[in-house]
Length: 548
Image (cartoon, rainbow, N blue to C red; front, side):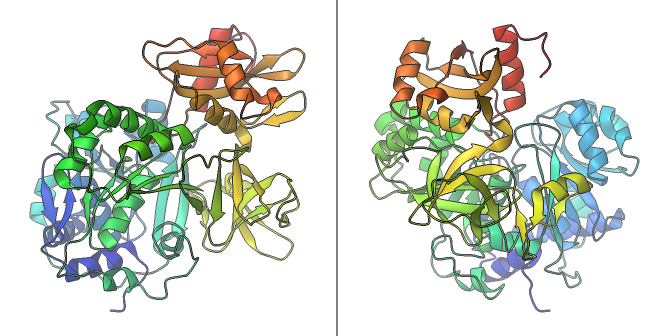
């Protein structure tokens, strides 16, 4: 059969090149490409025996482990659709997801069994439960009548005897964003391969012309790269870091839950070459921990350190550049679940933009549009909406209203993905990202993007983390408030922070209120939890009696 730009096909092409090479390492074990292939084949046959087939949606609800990857590829082999489940969801969020995603089965880690039992009735089609048991939990999940994961694998055939797959097979990723209930972004697998999986060269824009491209680069006679995608597999960055590693015949080292010291010890032990994170939520504790560990660990194997999908502050970049070997290449990429890669920059010391969050080389098909969906000309200084054309999602699953609001067609009939980020097109064609419009603060008619203010505040030496929200203001409508987590032993003052910020951003953008907290609320993927942050700030500032 002719291979397609299909995740199962791309994985199998790599298996056939390097069956004996280590594919994945987790906290408990290592597995070769050949072993991973055999186990995913067995699991796929077990799924099929339970009646799971093409197009069926199956949730995966676990922290990072090899079983997560086995479940994904077993489903892709069947042309079924894995659905990521956030392991921090509470019952209401689970109920919403089970129902919205039309789940028919769930692969889950035992500790989550009792919560699943409470929420399962939200989706009558959810009838099959496969239990991963590796964390020592004794949670009572008997109400689910689960099938043991290992028993399912043992019951299935190891043969690769599946039918032909398609470029049109669906990749579905649920994203919580920063507010509201999760949304399921639907992609054709070919489109998301080009947008996020390596199908378009990041710097040249050159497109892959054959599904054999990644596997043809594999040298079976030389060791592959060792890659560590640090984000959780329930997040797109974690999934695509792992996909890229496996499609290219490399070794992926995954961590069950983020712990900065554990990451660096794994870097030293496994001789990691490529380390990828999601912004400051991971990069800052990694930098501080590496500073503390000093020369205790050998991190000379690291060749690349990259961040994507969240703010990566210049001060943290420079701290890491000082601590890591000089040969390390550092990158800062922007993008979203709805658009894929939008742009990337090679990090240099002292190169923070004068305004905005970061300035990047635009990726293929990424533009800035005005309100009429017309292309903005370079260097005008006008603010527009970041958009991507070409290989973009089909839409949101089970949500035509949000699909219509995000995926728009211009007067020429071209379809764009416009998730809501605002940006400027620089004179040299690069793009300066300003922030998500839905979180912008309107103060006296001026639009303020929280992420830009956060970037300025994070460069203060006493700030560990911060989120910026708008609070009611009688004169200005809204004023800027900083929900701030200081570094241990520090108590920054509002006056100090305002003076510091004014050197980097306009005066009307600096915070007017400072609210100190023990920990800034963030989602498990490192993205800001603005909904919780705003509720916390309103309560601390005494606005609980006003509508949000």
